[in-house]
Length: 244
Ligand code: URA
Image 1 (spheres, rainbow, N blue to C red):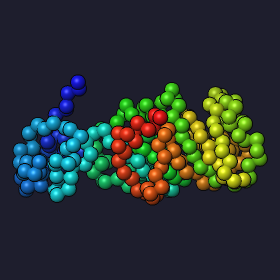
Image 2 (cartoon, rainbow, N blue to C red; image 1 turned 45 degrees about the vertical axis):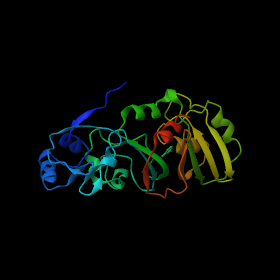
Image 3 (cartoon, rainbow, N blue to C red; image 1 turned 90 degrees about the horizontal axis):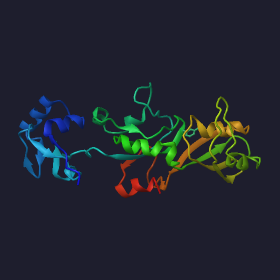
Image 4 (tube, protein in one colour; image 1 turned 180 degrees about the vertical axis):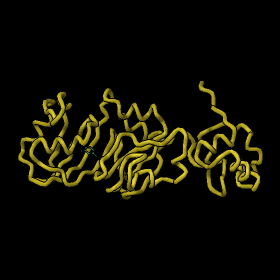
């Protein structure tokens, strides 16, 4: 059985971005930290870091943020970049500000282009991140692409062939599945995550992607009630669906 980790309260809250040790000591003194309904005044106290802590601990009248191992499902809006440090609007701006200071840091699981919308996962769990993006796992990603020109009918066979080599690359793409929705709209399922892969695949057949939206990752589908810019935490059952 794995042992439940313990942590000093000030260290735990610091690693969750709430503030420095001195700030946590001040907050506790002012009655801002409750554990199981009682004032927690000694922030040097060690407590067990269990997943139920957010339901037992309050910080300034709010439930504690999720403890380490969180997985966030975001409906990425257009115009935001999947980067910690680029200029302009970043997907991290959507999350609570203190989450930028969490250690381990929260990162996107793979990336979507600035002008791609849809299902994006973020996590502080490095093992999970690597399992999802590992080429060995072949996690399927389903994209809905809006195209500038009508499909010719030959794209599906080429994408499925495992022989398409993208410009500037040597290694052919793994087979991908094209499902035609209308002459200028298609669903494309890929198992790799090469740079601008979907846009470059359609460029390789003389077309141009005008809109791109990720709908599914493994067995996890973007819920219809999650509007662009909205996010929520995934349950362990939903996380397992990624590898279905
Ligand atoms: N393929 C692309 O071209 N862009 C994305 O954002 C994702 C897949």
